Length: 164
Image 1 (cartoon, rainbow, N blue to C red):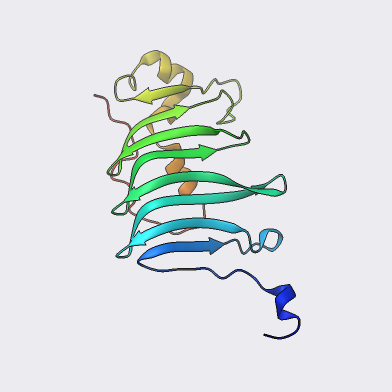
Image 2 (cartoon, rainbow, N blue to C red):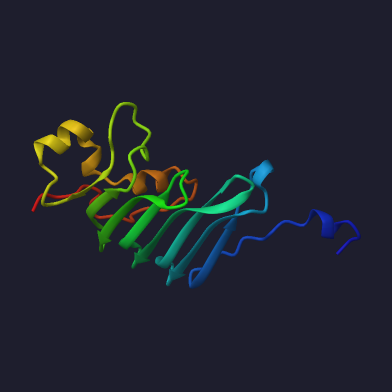
């Protein structure tokens, strides 16, 4: 290590098919900040997944959930500007079961209230569809994961809540 290497070192990504994977942000203003932390088992996503975002001079969780055999499974949460998650989705072996928006302006849709929980029991409720449109039937978090810059594929079987 040279004399100046200590001052200019960057964190190294850890990529493996079995165990903990860690990826750091490479953008100039965020270089060296943790971006993703997730687990793989035999090359498949399996275990906790966390995506971080930088804000207000600190690092915060943006998306947190679980994978099981490369499929979204269990509770997934996405944070916005508040310290509490704004969206919680429940998944079962890659199938979306419910979506809950926990505060009114999480989706930032003008003139539209977006607080509520949507499941297979109420997904075809005409009042909900009138207030929310088709957004209540599809995963919000999967769209965010697609925009994350991490190339993950085939993590769902169905991103639409099916009526019971």
